Length: 109
Image (cartoon, rainbow, N blue to C red; front, side, top):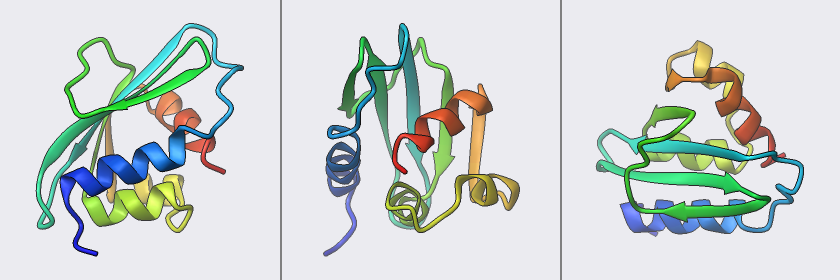
């Protein structure tokens, strides 16, 4: 399957919608900036009142922006890429609250 922006958003929804986010107080929101050879795109993941949304838009009132290429994003959400390793090796860059970004990724375990 060719990796498209749409397929990345779909894969993200498939991974995040089943998670139990009921412990999250208030709102956590992350903008994901997909960058690289496989194309560019922006979408967001919002966890609000225990409910997860993934939408293909920019999100201005966010905890962090995550910059990553499509291949590494798929590896990350499928637990094939360790988030801390990805961060320390520069495969993922975070503008904003790094702790919150890692917290969000822990939901996928």
